[in-house]
Length: 634
Image (cartoon, rainbow, N blue to C red):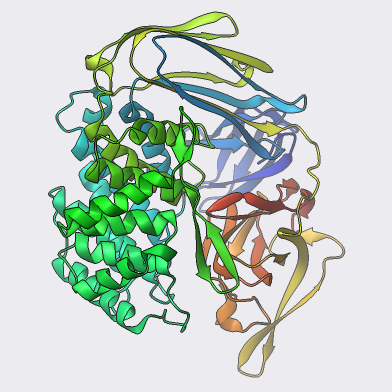
């Protein structure tokens, strides 16, 4: 439920005894307000039952504890349940990130809240790390706890953990030793990847779509990395994935007939070389076209040449990587785009910079660019301790881990102080013993001020990586709709009627008029318009008193029932408090809908539906918030 919302909680007391019983029924509430009497004494017939309703309202965000009791003179029972009260506004995040190496440094940063931020729904997290190693742990936590799981997100959830743990296996820190369940995470990830593998040997973004060249290359290279880290993999899965890569390279097109772009071909070639070698003609063809490569593909070509032990040409391409870097004395990066489909291109600067760092660390470990590139990557974290998306974050970790192996960041020697609004919140001497740790300061709710000044003081030799993240909810009573020409979403509610048509059921929708009662079926219809794009995610919170419906009788309520019900989508998930749609390709206009059944009476606030590009989440739109009143069906 949401803050300042009133709901009806129903309890049913069963009398399984062989005699009528006078029963004292009560509800104790901690964290919310009871709107009617919490106690009632009734006589329940033997083998009978009695229903009791309580109205509660939640004035503040937090956890509610509910304790219901049914007491008799012989037998009694009780049940305790938690209930979460969510903020009313939109979730927002502000970030700061920096890296510096001055022997004597004093840096000040500010992260401030807007005036309407909810006082009870705000969190400040400050991280300071002496090395790239320490700065990666927050990113690993983000990948591990990401709530969704397409093929890419499955790969990105466990593979970076494997790589970082392998790289730091000789460093004894609590951060590393605490990952004792890594084996379980790897097994879970591998099992999911195997389940997502298609009959042709490849992988798409989802279980039931077409095999995708990029995703097949990503999984093949990832399986090989897991194997090199001494995890047991299914060799047949790897072998069939390699064969699919060869087939797609020979054909030159995707399953839908679209020509495979040069950047993706470079990744496919690298995956083959890294997982056991490939036909040399694949590599030679990409090398011959290297003048047309973006920095993303150029780094992959260099890595493929290094993997083949073609040191001369690997260094030649590495020199081109160095020559094309952009930046200043402090940082360096590469700007890169990939024309994934004929009608649009994708910008992938973070991935290109991470792959270039990886290539230089392996081919030219003495390159003066390396620390500048690492600083750019760590400082470009848009979410304080992780990057813009799961894919960006995973690739950044891949590059930074290779840099860590050749850098001298694990031998710092300096004194560190951190101040928050003038208060000293950390004093630490940093040495080799603590080089791979992260020092974290957290403040929550009322402990987070509206204005937050963070001062970092450093005295001595070594790197310091800093990040701060302030997440909060706006305090708006009613959230307005927001969108743009790139992406816009609208939402409406309709009444669903299901009737018999001969031997089958059919559905129809009507405008939502009149009272809504428990048991009624509703339709949520969302329309999206905008620029063509790939990998769109839509999250639609449901009213707390309703539950999604997969089908009614033998009538499936999904796109398999025909386009009249819903346009195509890659995947749909029903969660406890929201419905989520994923579209691999958004052609600029789509209509999605699903059904839900009213369960619990009450006055409910409905949070806005939200759409965003999974790999460019700054392109987003939300509907307005809403309200619904559900009545009990007498």
